[in-house]
Picture (cartoon, rainbow, N blue to C red):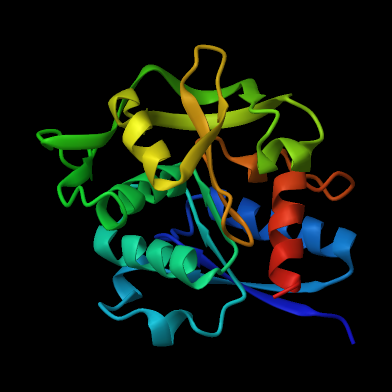
Length: 234
């Protein structure tokens, strides 16, 4: 019998937004290459309660998707924390990257006021701030740390990926994040952090770019394939 993986997609799914359909398709591409079945299910942030354990217990993997700000930021952060602390394979893309950084800053580094400058322009601790050069519907280079888990997945240290974002990690918080164990695994051509990973975890990767945009039936994206493979092994 083929392994079935239940993947919870955290985000506010709107029928007019194509991005979430692309995620489901990318998961199917990866599943076919691994000979497993995948069952993606949307988890709108307003449906994530203060205690998420019961809501998320049946999922083998969680993906925090793009198109923020989320309607229920705290719900999304609780789900990310659940994945990080429980060892549930996690992938965050675009807004998922941004909120993974905020969750880590709040929960691990004790920065309770860590926030997102898009939803709170006056945030005293804007861990996520406007990018100096926004990446909107552009493909750009990603330079990977050769020692990173992500580089081992790609089997190379420079790749091209698709972006659609205006906000990223505030460089002022790079050192504190590293002190807590979250690592920058990749940067763009100008040195802006675009990939985060947590090594002490079955799979925990967040990307400012959207790998789902470059997945094809004949060429599943390596990050998504590795994410799904980790979930299938749980």
